[in-house]
Amino acid sequence: MVDWGLAIKTAIGGFGLVFGILVLLGISVELTRVITERITGIKK
Amino acid sequence: MLFGLLETGFPLFYWGNALMILIGLGFIYLAIAKKMEPLLLVPIGFGMILVNLPLGGMMDYEMMLKAPQAGTVMEVSMHEGDAFKKGGVIYKLDSGEVTAPVFGRIDTLRVSQGQRVEKGQTLGSILTMEQTNQAELPTRPVGLLSRIFKFGVMWQILPPLMFLCLGALTDFGPMLANPKTLLLGAAAQFGVYLAFFLALIFGFSMSEAASIGIIGGAEGPTTIYVTSLLAPHIIGATAVACYSYMALVPIILPPVILLLTTKKERGIYMRPSLRKVSKLEKILFPLITTIIVILIVPSSAPLMGCFMVGNLFKESGVTDRLNKTAQTTFVDIITIFLTLAIGASMPAQNFLQPRTLLILVLGVVSFATAAAAGVILAKIMNLFLKEKINPMIGAAGVSAVPMSARVVQVMGQKENKQNFLLMHAMGPNVAGAIGAAIAGGVFLGILG
Image (cartoon, rainbow over all chains, first blue to last red):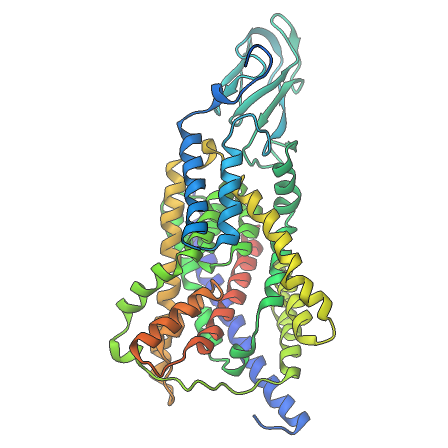
């Protein structure tokens, strides 16, 4: 017997979490770029 | 018995073995004649052949047969060497029957007619090729490939090590140059969750559905890793679906892209030059990603940790020997072990079931919807972007590095000769690989 409540939570929560983490990584990448530009003084 | 001396495999050979050997030969043909993923299909195909030649014993596991209740043996229904299906009667006791919990053949029988047995007493041993839940039906590998499978795949050693090698082979530069492409890799994980849901509707358990859904992540090691932990009995089907569809990306992706984009959209020009990513950024990325991802999804640590340490070998500039080994010799060794073991996880008795066909269908649905979700998100992003992106690169979010990016490049060139989309498509491509590893970790965190 499938626990549909858990299934829906797994699907929606799981996809949301994956999406959220990759967005967070995107933000980290941008922040890293800005910080490294400040440190090195080289604009790309 | 051949001349009364030697036991041959013929008495146990049946049409299912013949069919699986033909499929194995088909894989080897595709690899050699059509050059489709030869490094994967040759060993997988050969493993399939090996495991379907009865009595070869390369994928055998030994299992002790225990008495389910006390009683006196009224009849010994089988002899040593006899083959049986799951549920076949081995002993008849006055208190009930002793049936086979898996398919296989009798190795030894220790009690005889008229003998009294106690509950839990060992009645003999059987040999099986079935992957069992070790908590309920413990087995001991006794063949070359079953040992590799048990200690390499089931102990989750080979898939993360394969990820380490993939990390050493991956250039995150295009993604770092254009971080928007991370969104496309994220969108493509929609296919994973849609297939998960569909599998539940078709009657699979939650653990099986997760293992089927992750096929859409298009990462062989992730699929094998998740399935080995959640649903080891279907690992042959999910692994073959994943690797086969990765080889079939040039056939699966174009119709999805053509269906969802107009000619004008496919012709959108993207400037070939991406910004130059500094060495410092490339070194920091695997470190930052490891910390963020594993803090949020700890169960993704084996895959993500290995992926990123492999990438750090490549980018650090001070571990050339490790990097070179991971990119060449080590990845080859892991590939040999992993693919032979996966091929050998497909004995006919296990593989030829209606459920396998359903897994293959759900796998392709997962792949196609993953690509579709990437394309659709790219089109949505274009509503807000000043400099438009070619929506075809969204399809590369399905991972299958670098095949899907190459498909996008070829299709882009057909529409606009000036367009070089390869590097743009590599962004969502590697983002998809990260996304798949996280999705696998999320499944393990919730269901493991």
